[in-house]
Image (cartoon, rainbow, N blue to C red; front, side, top):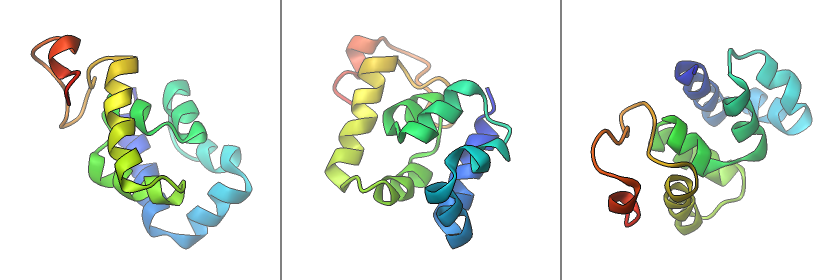
Length: 108
């Protein structure tokens, strides 16, 4: 997995109006410029906050990506919870769930 590239993309998207414009106009061309794996690319293209969270993307990066997608704060928080329920524990990054089971994190 290329977690660094996914987070770098989100960082750039969150802070650069030109990247935001390219994201709206030609997502695939923009995403091709980053060393993303297929799972990351699809999650970004689909705006799947929950999947990106489970892949290990930092919540502070995701919390700025969500409004770009038109996702309200409460729905953003629920999307992360849904991601854990749907895809399993966070796999990498600072939120990696290294102990417990999915049953224990269902109340995240």
